Image 1 (cartoon, rainbow over the protein chains, first blue to last red):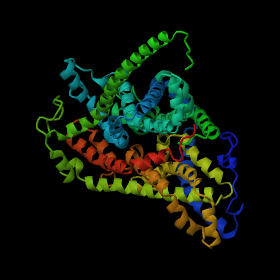
Image 2: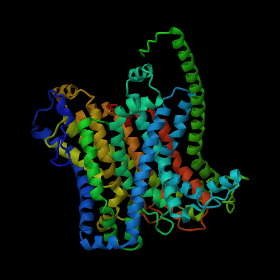
Image 3: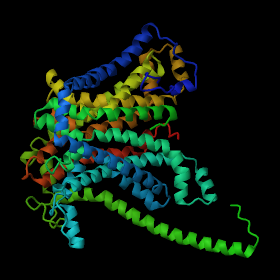
Image 4: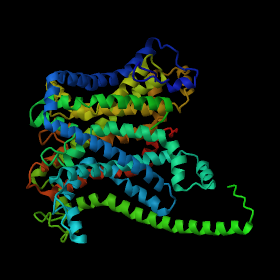
Amino acid sequence: MSSTPQVLTARPAALHRPRRPSWPRHLHGSELAWAAAFVVPYAAVFLAFVVYPVAYGLWMAREPSLYRDLLRDPLYGRTVVNTLLYVGLGVNLKMFLALLLSGFFMRRRWWIKALLPIYILPWALPAIPAFVSFHWMLIGEEGFVDSVLSALFGIPGPIWFTHRWLALGSNIVAYIWKWMPFWTLTFLAGRLAIPQELYEAAAVDGAGGCRRFTHVIFPLLGTLYLVCTLLSTLWTVGDFTTVYLVSEGAPSYSTDVLATLGIHYAFDAAQPALGVAAVMSALPVLIPIAIVLMRTVHTKEVQL
Amino acid sequence: MSTITADPRLASRASTRARRAVRRGRYLGKAGVLVLSVLLVVWTIVPIYNMVLISLEPEGDVFTDHLWPKVPSVESFLGVMTEGHWYLEHFWRQFANSLYLGAMVTFLTLLFGSLTSFSIGRMRIRHGWLVSNCALLTYVIPASFLAIPFYRIMQNYGLANNLWSVIAALVAFATPYAIFVFQEYGRSIPIEVDESARIDGASPFQIYRRIYLPLMAPALVAVGTYALLLAWNEFLYQFLLLSTKSSMTVPVALAQFLNSDQSPWNYMMATAIVYALPPVAIYYAFRRRMTAGLTMGGVKG
């Protein structure tokens, strides 16, 4: 890999360890034809189903008046706040808990080893059944959560989806439930890659759990943590399924995020251009995140 | 560790105290670990238990606020198996659609991804880096943000309500990751292998087919599972692009239940559980290799 001018300024990793190329430096004749033919299928897919939709989307959202309409719509402002809260709280809570839990799963007790496959289950479970279940669990008095509350404590639970903050919180909890195991595994792999001697050295020097965390683990996993957080942010901004299935935007579109609002504009309000404009308005935030992410990956050589 | 005290007695008393504190800490730690384990199990299991609970209720008795089914009934599962409810008329057709979608996305992602990474990483086609970097740029704009233009384009192509439109979208989204992983993994295979094959007169396609693919098997398994699970998890594109009962996949059919307040929820949950079984089975079958794929090449700090 090498660099495109603005986005990737880092050196390609392969250049660091030069190697005698077995294929000739410049391919000729039939070999060049083969090499080109191998790239063509993906290049065609990329042009037809990535470049074309992006260009088409930008073209659909080209009118400045669309953005004026968006700013005038109170729904849009509320959605931006929801998206910020959903992504900011969801991603950071999930990542931090995953980092702590990855330490928990480093323990060598047999029941912790047995716990890991169970804990991973939400990740293996498809998103749709999981979120449908969350929706019914929180549906109100008849939902499982409120039934438990009244059976154990004798208190009537709230009706979760009639209150904006409760509904938003439900979305975040469902999101964390589904995706935390994946990142825990990633951090677990990262921790396992830290040489065991470092832990032992820290323990010999009398570092307790807390200090070991701040002085050994965090500096070593810091880059990985940053990369994973940025990557997860990019993915979560585009999350449609969670909000659509758990709170369904209830009450009255007040927990929508940008991805669901775009679809709502396009298919319920029959304003596709406005829908595209709503989601494209996130690009000024997404592009810098992507740039930082790619720079970090290239300079620090973190591999996922 | 260099606490040299003048008085040895003082030092020993301090160390006894320290040892006692350590022991107390260990008990507390053990209790904490146990509590945390129980909490994690509850946290993980509750939504899954809720699914099973609702699916086992006899029809009409759903939501009667008890914590376990009074009269568990497998009626709903039988209903799913025999397409015994009008919501489930085409269940097996839809399940087959989901399988077809998953299989095609996996196959094409592996095919296109491995061909591209072979050309870029092994044959080192000129400007190959441009292809792999552009591919990664796919992830700057989330797939859900492209759903509206994609829907329009597919309508223009006359591919709306066709499974292949969803396959195209998912392959386009999964392949960049495949190329990335294959290139990283491919670095661990010595290039001399290709060299000796070339000297023996193998064509690039033969090298790809006979040497590259077998050596890449672990990465292929990891990425293949990823692509399959991606297709199985995806909802938005299937929801927008597939609208007739015979062309839709199981997730879209599940969303149909949500359109009405009078839907048979036990059937819906039974459908959800049946749909969730294959990936869970695949996941546990390939668990070790998938985790290996996740951390392909290790994590360098």
